[in-house]
Image (cartoon, rainbow, N blue to C red; front, side, top):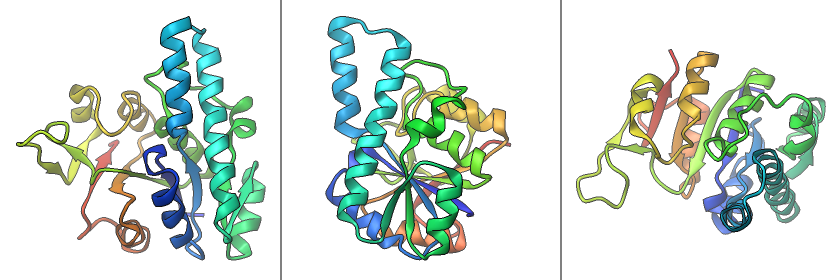
Length: 216
């Protein structure tokens, strides 16, 4: 199992389903972002001030929801809750969609705050599996300025150390810190174009529209 593909909640449901379907037979595991379900938790947190731990656990359950729903409408996708189940599903030529709450219940070292989202949690899962991480979102990668700024330019390659100074981007604020800690790289690509995702999974990012974030 070489890859974990994190399908961003911003792609849910149509683009997310199309991307998930395209991954059949590739041998990648999938983690889904919480999308608008997690946004609702954040909205009510601003009104009622839930504890950081309650927010964190609820946001992970939102990842469960999107993963379970997507795996229900894509025939080649199978919801799984353990790494062993992941390997079994891949061996059968299908795509495992990780329902992460159980996996993270006793092995989640993440900071409990809104700085940590499904991006950082997906990296932790990829690290458990000893796999590389690809984050599929609704933009082409990391930009010099936040789109749709007129002067925003796509960055093809950036170190996680440099990304620390960017603040909020298309990935969560904690991800660069975690990439440095784990000495890991990740790829950020537009999931509305499954061919771009497949190109990276098969051949790396040599000629693909994306951003590579390097943790070295």
